[in-house]
Each structure stands twice: as structure tokens, then as C-alpha cells.
Amino acid sequence: MTPETLPSWPDAAADLIAIAAGRAPADTVVTGGKVVLVHTREVLDWQVAIARGRFAYVGPDASHCIGAETQVVDAAGRYVIPGLCDAHMHVESGMLTPAEFAAAVIPHGTTAMFTDPHEIANVLGLRGVRLMHDEARGLPCSMFVQMPSCAPSAPGLETTGHEITPEDVAEAMAWPGIVGLGEMMNFPGVAAGDPKMLAEMAATAQAGKTIGGHYASPDLGPAFHAYVAGGPADDHEGTCETDAVARVRQGMRSMMRLGSAWYDVETQITAVTEKGLDPRNFILCTDDCMAGTLVNDGHMNRVLRHAIACGCDPLVALQMCTINTATHFGLERELGSIAPGRRADLILTSSLTDLPVERVMALGQWVAQDGRLTAECPHIAWPADARSTVNMARDLTATDYEIPAPKGANTATARVIGVVENQAPTKALTRDLPVRNGLVEGDALTGGDTCQIALVERHRATGGVTNAFVAGFGYDRPMALASTVAHDSHHMIVVGTDRAQMALAANRLRAVGGGVCLFEGGEERALIELPIAGLMSDSPAAEVAAKADVLMAAMRDAGCRLNNAYMQHSLLALVVIPELRISDLGLVDVTTFALTDLIETS
Image 1 (cartoon, one colour):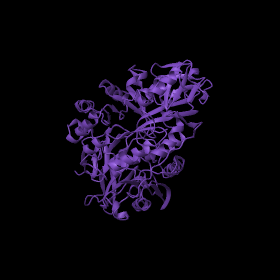
Image 2 (cartoon, one colour):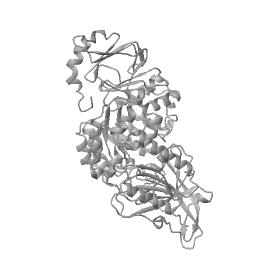
Image 3 (spheres, helix red, strand yellow):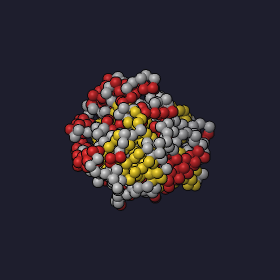
Image 4 (spheres, helix red, strand yellow):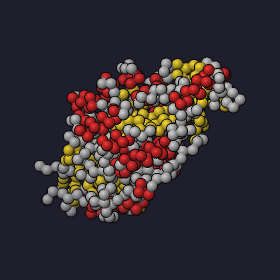
């Protein structure tokens, strides 16, 4: 069963009624379990009958639903809980196609995902979104797609491979797997009443679908209230209790994320556990998870366990990644609970706190057992032009990364992007940097912590290279790390302590068609090939994760001690999250949404 072949509730209703009444047999009956009802936060010794991919009967005795061909599964005292839902995530951040992402997370109990493919939208436009949508429709789980809203995320401050228009949004709203509008990142535009942003939100509202939010600012004054008035219904950019409280007080859902590098649950969930606010307005999500996290640590089961460890009642936490999510997207009658008519998504687990995922059903079929996928996740045929997207004009040389100093200067005061561990925001720093032979240099090789960063244009072969500085990674030897995953415009980000190796890394990615690579000591130490849009691999998650492990080890060997620092690397061009970022147009002050000078002048 797939979303494409799953019958609608009305189409299946006659069969479900007959089974619940005992006039027809179910496909599957689960007995001997403790059924968790998220609508009431009860755990009952009930039984469940399933047919046509949906729950037909949920009650104390399903024996009247059993026929000669019915599969009867004894849960053996385990808990029967709804399949987990990820309310906000980006498939591309896993470096995987939708099929391989699903194959990685289904064994962890994730049966529904709400994904915003704005990464591929920046590279391939509406066509890229359609490719993601089409692959999602053929999977043995529910992968809903949000139509990306902001490509570019900040018009006038970056150049993307393609732009998303209100007409694109209106067209996508008619596709069967589109559930709403992806995160509205251009929050200054919304607050200012930008006609394009308003048109996209209007097209979504007219289709009766949900508008996703992204308010990445600590300012909770009039700008925040203006943003909420525009229509975004949720937000995942909060980092503290005050943020969470402010959002739910305005009728938004607070989405608290635990991704590979975003640890924002513990600091916000106190709004429920200590302040006592209504938990139905709080939702758990991942936002960005790398393949290594998915393979080694888990997905929404990891987030659920973390929320419980932060003091949240297990049944409340379970609501936050099941029924709360479904309700938010207008799908409460479709998924998120074990109740008649809903999609038959469930997990068998022996503990509500440790949450071992022992068996998984999605859309009425058993799809995983004891961490092993038992269903197929078919790929679409990704076209050739989706695999040829690194359009650099030429190979680069060390001179492309030179930063001229003010005439006659021995030192220069530079604006520097400051990386913050485990968070998406950066700090706007200043550093007095050395000048050698008329060029401003980083100081990472001389006892400091400032490296060079470059944004290499890769969509239109302009040959453009924007140079700046970044601090916080800890690199302390000659090296360079390059990536064509560069949220959200997805040019190429190169961070390094040696200009010659920065050129080697960029040229290597040009040669392989995209990915991530690290050079140290003049040699390639790690390479993850991402041939699809320079963002994704259609190899299995375990293979990508193994290469990611090599990358992480190479980063540590080069001096980096941050947790999952590659995520910070990949977001250094995200010009809608404060405070300081880089784009193909220059250095961006995200507190004022304006380009700023790299070198301060007196």
C-alpha cells in the first residue's frame, strides 16, 4: 500500500463498517497489547482490526472481526502506539532521496513526514519539487509535501538557481500530496506586506491548506505580531521558553526541534512541563537530520525519547509527535491516532520511555521489524539534468580566495561569522586579523580561530566567488571543507585555512557533480558524492552515513570539536537566520537584512 493506492476513508467506509459490525473479516487483527489512545491519554487492554490500509475497529474485543484469512498478531503485552509523525523536516538534509530517507526512518517508527523540499526548489525550481512529490507518493508510508515558499529566501540578498512564484504555489496546491505551504522564511517581507509573499499565502489559504512558519528573530514586538497576522500557523525557530510561549499565545503551534545539530526541545518544553501550558499546541520535529543520525541514533523516536528525558510525560510527548501534528495539518481524521478510519500506522514497543521500536505497520502493512526494513521503497527515475547541476565556469585557484587589505595596513578589522554550537543562529563578531603581502589572512594557523569562508557560485556559471571570514570551528592545520549543500541558495560553501586547498576542494566537487569533501595536508580525506541536485544521493542511507562518519572524523582530525559541525557549515549561507551570513552577493547582516562590508573602515 502507498499513498497513491490507499483508498480514501469514504471509499473504504462500507468495508470498515462491515468489519466493525462483524459482517466481514479484517485483514489483520492485533491482540494482546496495551493500546495507547492519544485522544484521551489512556492505555487500555484493547484490540485492533485493520483492513484496506485503515483501522476498522478499536475496542476491547476484536474476535468478531477475525475470519479464516485474517492475520492475527499477538502483541504479547507490548504497547500499541500510533506511528510517529515528523511535523517539519527536509529530506535533502539527510543527503538522501525521499525513497532512501523513508527506508532509513521507517524502522525507527516514523510513518508520516511533512517535508518542505525548498532545498531542491532553489536548484531546480518547481520541477524539482514535483520530482520529490512523485517519489513520495510511491512509498509505503505517508510523506506529505509542503510547497516551498521562499526561493530565494531573501530576495535581493542572494541568487538562486530558480525562483518560486505565487503561480507555482497555486499550481502545486492542486497536487494530491501537497499539504500546505513550506516555511515562510521571508519574515521581514511578510511583516512589511510584500505582495508576493501575501499572494503565496493567499493561494494556500484558498486551497484550505496550512501555511508553515519560520520566524528567526528574537524580536517579539510589532514585527512578530505582524508576521503572525499574515497567516503562518506554526514556527520551529524558537530556542527558549519565551519563544514557545509567545507563539502559542498567538494561536500558532510551537514546533520544538531536535535534529542532528539543533537542540531546541529542552529549552522550550518547560512551557509545558513547568509553566503548565496546554500541550496540544506543542509539536515535536527534527527539521534537519543527517544520514549518520538516522542510521546510528534514530529519527522521531530519538526526539520522543529526548522529550521524555527532559521531563515530559510520555503520553503527552507522544501526542506531540502524533495527534498534535495531524490536527495541525487538518488531518486528524486521517492519521496520528489509533482510531477507526485512520491510516493504519502503528508501532509495537515494550516501553513507553525507552521506546524500542520492535515492529512497525504503515498504511496497514508490516514494514519493519527489530530495526530492519521489510518493505520496498521504490525510486523514481531521476532525470539527467537533475544530476548535472554544478555549473561552475572554471576550476578555481588560490588567487580566487584572496582578500585585499586596505592600502598600507598591517592589520585589518573584519566582520566575522561566529558559529554557535547546536544552534542555527550565528554571531556577528569582529576580529583584528593579520595582513601579509597586502592580503587579509585568517589566524587559525597562528593560535586564533578565524578561517576563511567562500561562497562559490554554481548555478549560472558566473565564476563569482564571495570571500569572508568565519570563527568557531577550531580548525588548526592547513585544510579546506567544501559543500554544495549550502542552505538555502545551495551554491558552494568552502571553509578553510589554506587558499590552495580551498581551490582543490571546490574543484573536486565540480568534477564529481556535487557533494561534500575535505582536503587536509594537500590530500582528499573525505568525500560524499551527492549527484542529485548537488544535494542528495540515491545510495542507501547506511552507505551515505558511512561516508559521513569519515567526514566527521576528518573534521575532528583537522581540529574541529563541535557537535555535528557540518550542519553549521551547511547553513552559513542561510540569509534568513541572524546574525551574519554569506551569499553570492556579499556578506549579509541578517539583523538589518542588508549587505555589509567585510572590512571595517575608520
